[in-house]
Length: 142
Image (tube, one colour):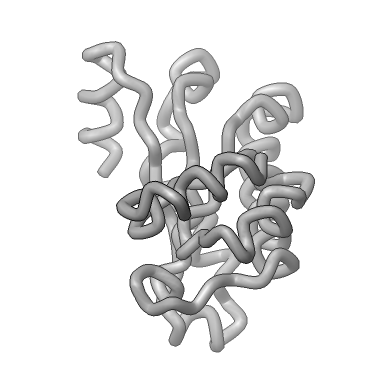
């Protein structure tokens, strides 16, 4: 994955790096270290200047296409841990300026609560983007 990120950056593209856990890992309680390890292995070789061009998207695998969604508390919990992990490598300023999106089945009904979370900077909208009314309602929740 690190090589692909490097290739995107070499071509002046802004990668959206997706990370997340399966339901089994979520239920084991080891999901934060699992997600942080994905980030470390794929992104932590980057310089600070290069990392500034990365967008991170938390995509809980257990919520993609299943109709299940992380609660706002679950999303915030993971997003704050991702931000703290980024800060441990690149410092608070870069961590605070890194966009961390939620990508696990955001819908018009849950988007306002999800996007109100302090560390959820937006959404990576999947299936709901195919329904124009749903997508517009999600956008209005920002």
